[in-house]
Length: 289
Ligand code: GLU
Image (cartoon, rainbow, N blue to C red):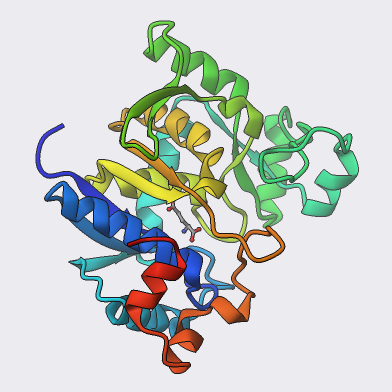
C-alpha cells in the first residue's frame, strides 16, 4: 500500500444522525489521527427516494458540532451513477450478471422461506436466472424495468481462479488492534442485486467502487455490516480492486439490548445538542474517552 492510511465515514442521509453514527465517525476519525492518515466523508445517497437534502445538511452540522474535520471534496454517490453503471458493465462483460425483472412479491412467493440472506431477506430463488434471450429482449422492448443480479456460483468460480485456489479472505482488526484473517463467505448472499431496478447502483457495488477510487485503506464501520464485507471482498477480486483492512466496531444498544435505530429519537444528535449535551458527553455516551 502506498500513501497515507485513508479512512472514511459514509452515512446515508435517510434520517437524522444518532449516537451510533457518532461512534462510527469518531472511530474512523480517531484511527486516522492515530495513524497520521486521512479522513474522508462520503454521502451514500443512491437511494434517491429515501434520501433528503435536510438530512445531508444535518450530517454536516452534527459532525462539525462534534469537532470532526474531513478532507474536501465530499463525495456524493448520487452524482456518480455513471461510474457504478460502468463498474457493473465490467462484471457483465465477464458474464457474471443477469437481468431480473421479478418484483419483491414474486420473489417472496417463489422463495422457499427458509433460506435467508444475512439481512434476513429471502435468498433469490433463481426465478429469472435462465430466461431465454428472446424473452429478455421482449421484456426490455416492453419497457419492463430490471435489476442486474450476480450469478454467485459463476462469480465464485472466477474468483477462485483469480486467487489461484487460495481462499477468499479479509483482514479484520480486533479491539486490540491486532489483524486477523477471516474467511469470506459471499455465497451466503446468493444472487445478490448489483444494479437495482430503481437506480443504477447498489450499496454493495457503490461502496466497493468508491472505497477503491477514494483510496480508502481502512474501512471502519459497525458490526451490522460485517456480513456485507464477504460480498465486498468478492466484488473487489472480480474487479481487480485493492483490498482494504476492515474494522467492524461494536454496536450501541438501548437499555433493552436492542440495536439503536435511526428512529430512536432520544439518541438523535440534533436533539441531544438542543438539550445542551456537549460533544465531550457524546463521546462518553458512546463509550469513548
Ligand atoms: N452508508 C452505510 C450506512 O449508513 C454505511 C456504509 C459503509 O460504511 O460501508 O449504514
